[in-house]
Length: 121
Image 1 (cartoon, rainbow, N blue to C red):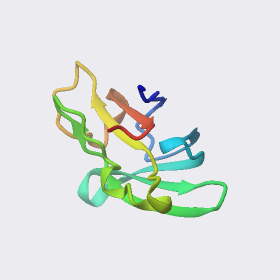
Image 2: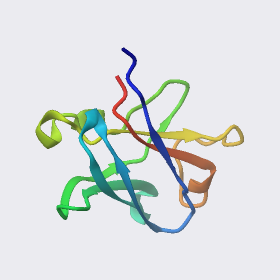
Image 3: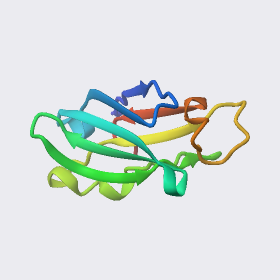
């Protein structure tokens, strides 16, 4: 039996603080997630925090947004133990074909695509 994967594309901008809410079901258990993306000026790095919006609980705090370069890099892989081993899903930051930069900087986050959804693998 093949596992059905579902992802949301989060519409990134270059705003220094962005908030999204989305519903995902990693491993079949629903999660109403609040996703906060912010730019840390001192280190010129974008980070993401994820909350269980329904329970008002912080799940992960300030994970660096690192772009996948030729292979899928699941930013949430280290957090599969959360929520009783059900995890919080998978997240991938993908470069657009026009982006020569590695990881996003202050002025180019909107040139990347952020996918969030089902736990991969």
